[in-house]
Length: 458
Ligand code: SF4
Image 1: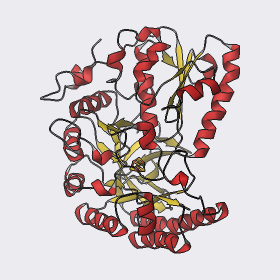
Image 2 (image 1 turned 60 degrees about the horizontal axis):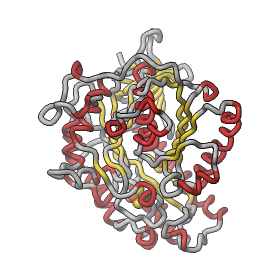
Image 3 (image 1 turned 60 degrees about the vertical axis):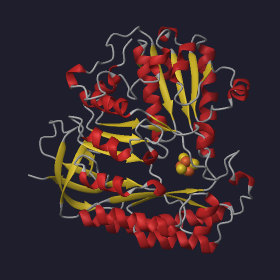
Image 4 (image 1 turned 135 degrees about the horizontal axis):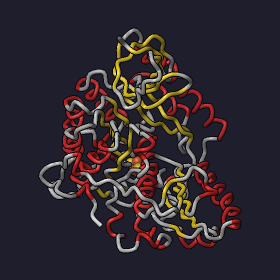
């Protein structure tokens, strides 16, 4: 079997006509995917879907019809892990009713835990590590002989075309070389491994051929891309290459580490026409004591400097961040530092989470000394402050005309996002016309903290 994305792409990207599509004929068998966690998991599930499509399986929305069910797990938070355990329990009955059913578990829950999991969930037929999609051959004999090719399979569903998806996630680097004290990812995903640049570009061409208009390049530390590849291309080089793919109108990337936000990368965001002016840059805490205990490798002043450089270089940029409240040892003064930093920088989006210890991480050895109700209070304080900032910033859209990539309909309106990743709902005449996948100009008439409303601009 040949995999198209890597062919003939060393010196040039393939034309759309040269891109090979997945076989259209199925073998009558059905698969179902269940995914929890981050966009990396979404993307890796898509790769599993592509492998199963290649084997002749087709997706079913009803697990009871499936011949194989693959669960993709997350253990970053305790609540996510509990959901996976609950789901595995629920599938036990299905397996009893249909002993032929194959069940596989992948994702962060699996790495290094196979023996324990086999005892705990004997009804699961296969456990495989994230990205080890070639292991599927153990329960999908149709993949026999092509295992080695599966690792290069594109990260999309074979059925994506029928679903008319406009946006797609594409992992470009796996693992993480940082060791943030609270984070389980380095233990479960290993050291950083970048995909070859031409493999990524080839996949972007294939996605474009399938109607995808926006691609988000993914990595736990996406801006570490390329240091392990020959010639050490970096994320800016990759963005420039993907920017030339015909049909891809927008490119995003996440998640970036502040320490690796180089001037070259910031310039690429400013200069490349298809790269959107939106950056996801987790700060996690706004006090140097907490940052140091988190082992984030930067100070609040370092973070400020990067934000200022981004804003000076990229006009109309929007910035999102992540915050953890209630980290071990976080006093009221430290937490106030977080509130102050967020008030000062006025970032567009803040994702806030309450700390919970993950086994085997460095911080799990420390006392989880911020009481749960205090974590709740801090969580709400960040959200309350941010909602006011977000509402004010969204208000800047009011009365203006903004380019929106339409990705669907919701509650009787069309829905899409601006280049700055702001969610917009809009009315358009002749709703029988399909706007999905189109870039349209929307006149914004109403704004709220999390979205805006408008009408199509004549
Ligand atoms: S940078 Fe830190 S938080 Fe992000 S994946 Fe790596 S270790 Fe985890």
